[in-house]
Image (tube, rainbow, N blue to C red; front, top):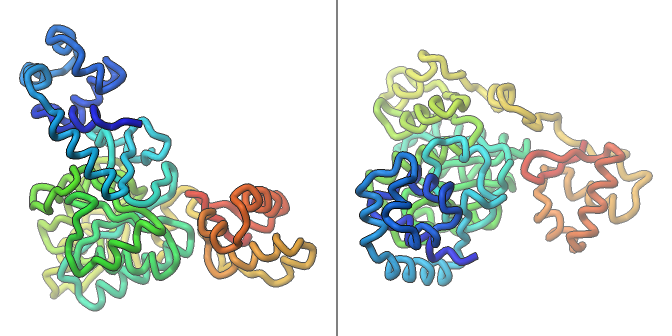
Length: 359
């Protein structure tokens, strides 16, 4: 798919996300928008005259060409809201981006929980965030955060250590490493998840970008967990977005004498669910995949060698189908067939996001 006109329209002044979508509803393709007359554009419901003028008069080809080149150089995918990969929950957000820049893999219907909090995390906060992320991953739940210092970093680290999926939503371009000390995590996340941004390639992290980034963090998640947040912090903005989007909001209680806990403690006062362990989160999630620790004993007595191998692979933790294929050295078709047989026999269960675990 050629995204030239998608980039051109997105870079046109006075064309925001809602206007972009209305134009596509009318003209079906961004290229057709630029071919339309001023009168045809003006007939689109809700479009502002400034938008019409900008589309007709502005030449966005240079920006679009540069963006196409930058995306190709960085090996970045562009996932439009028409794509089957686009997160279904994000479509529920009124001003969802017309497309996302993605490094890694998105799963449209995976079950995700966001973990956010203070950049100046205490040892307690960072340890708690990492443990909860690890426990969520063990239940096949994707951990979403913003790749910032502190709680965000701890959440991504916990998910990755557990072999789970993690999604980092950036307030800059997906080709910009921020903060620099997170380079290793930045490189690791796309291998087992995705880096995501709505901002053009090369966009530097600016303060005004992060509130917009936060609505995507909550938008692709079924719930938002706040671990340590000061009053008026960005984490509370994410929690507010979550409430507006109909998501669950959770909070870890903190030291009443610590300023970095005032925001999260306040959320609990206002009705956010107090979280002491992963079970408090799983209780509120649909199809959470909550289960006792899987056991392999006696499961391979009547299995073929290949079936037994897959059950053994799945014993420690749930695995994504791509990881099963890689670890088993079987073809995608062979793995799919074996997984189906095991599932029909009650040996394994499938979790959201194409993860599998021992039943």
